[in-house]
Structure formats: structure tokens, C-alpha cells
Image (tube, rainbow, N blue to C red; front, side):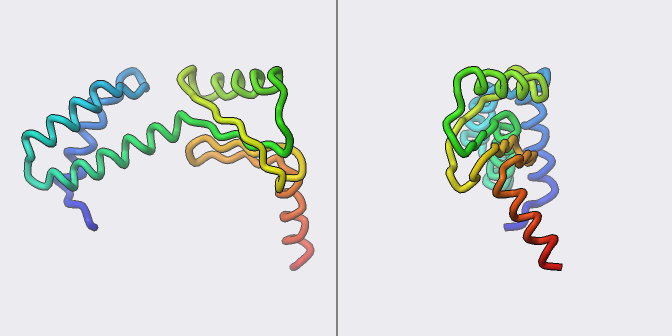
Length: 132
């Protein structure tokens, strides 16, 4: 569904109101959604849809998914979390999981940023370079 310029502008204005000092204020976001539902301005469904998309993207920017071939110890988990907080801010959340298909190493995804230091990725890159 194509969104109108007016609806996109309004959703961005709401989003700017929701982010304070670079951090997402969920109470303000809930109030904005409630206000949209009750007042029902023109194209409010488009505004609501785009606003929710912007909120989802902002939440994803603050959430890290760390995959490793084996279970990481507490020291390494704390080290990775501290490094991510230095780079992305203190409000970053982390999820740790194991993925045996990585063979070794780890893959970290924060929003659209991906760091892949796994052995599987290295093998795939080597396979692609030899296939030429």
C-alpha cells in the first residue's frame, strides 16, 4: 500500500516527538497511538502503519543478536555486551544464542549492521572466490 506524503510527514513528526535525547520514550509512543486511534485524522491508518514501522526500526537499532557456534561463557558475554554498549549506547539489549551451523566464531547483528566472524562465512567466501 502506497502511503501519502501527508501521512508520512505526520508519522515522522510523531516519531520525532517520541525520541528524546536519542532514546525511544515508549510512554510517549503509547500516548501517540492512543491519540491517533481516538481522534482518527485523515489517513490515520496509513499514519499509524508508518509510525509503527519507524518504531520497529528504532527498536531493532537498539537490539543485538549474538550467535555463536558454542555457548559463550559469562566473561565473554559481558565483554561482548560492554563493547556493544560502547558502540551503540547504554540502552542496547542483547540476545545470545547458539547456532552449530556457524562451525566456529560468532555473528553479531544490530539493526542493519552485521559482523560475521564465523568459520562458515569464511568458507562461503572462499568457495565463491574459487568458483570464479
